[in-house]
Image 1 (cartoon, rainbow, N blue to C red):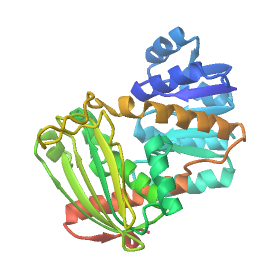
Image 2 (image 1 turned 180 degrees about the vertical axis):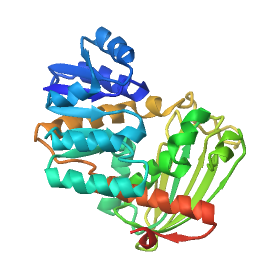
Image 3 (image 1 turned 60 degrees about the vertical axis):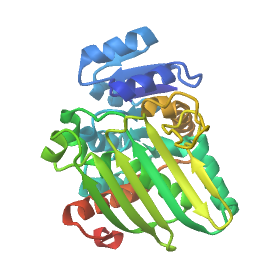
Image 4 (image 1 turned 90 degrees about the vertical axis):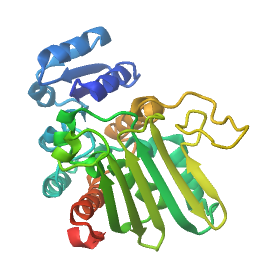
Length: 331
């Protein structure tokens, strides 16, 4: 396969390293707005650097979009209209209106698209989803989600991120739908500013919580932080009438027991999302290449990404208007 990669930043660089060693990839072409950065990444990998427009114009067999969020919508539409199967890191677009436009334009092309939500490819989340499907938890009554970063992103990132619910918790919203197989009906969200002032300046928060009611009455709670000194903490707890399963409760969980004589977990805590989810990212991109070759359906379509964004939008409205927001209001 001849694969194009747009974006040579942090996540683009990891994708490039994985793609360069994948047996299905015969040629990798890397494009970035900063030509020198693209060349610096391509050289050691035996890849080729090119102008981003030239990458799409050459009609590769597949293209991965790992550029800044503001460019996703345009590049995704251009790829599909050129007939190139595309992988795009979340989000599809920074706002709901543009996401709807992209969905409609992409659908008209019939070209397969895979939106990046890597937690769907994590072994723990996959096992929990299967347990729910198999009925091993009985009737699901309660879900709890945690996403907490050990250190906050820089101010310039926060200013354009769209806020903690759109940028960070959108992963929780997607995985909640995927694991439970249910839709969210309403969201009540709160937040606080406990750290640097640039979060408040961007009308964002650094500490978050929400209550989500699913369409079968199941209650989900969620909490997050940009200042989790214990490490990178991502977990999902699902409790039903027959059992409770927890994703992310391993030897590297960013937790310590207060009980005397209990020294579990004994490993060093996860430090960042890449450290925690590297196998999931590898599986995700491998699945995308299968999709591009016609061997698999898209594991996460634009429509599914839109559903996660709708929940994030509802949470953001709830935070700013201090009220419960039904998803039906936004549709």
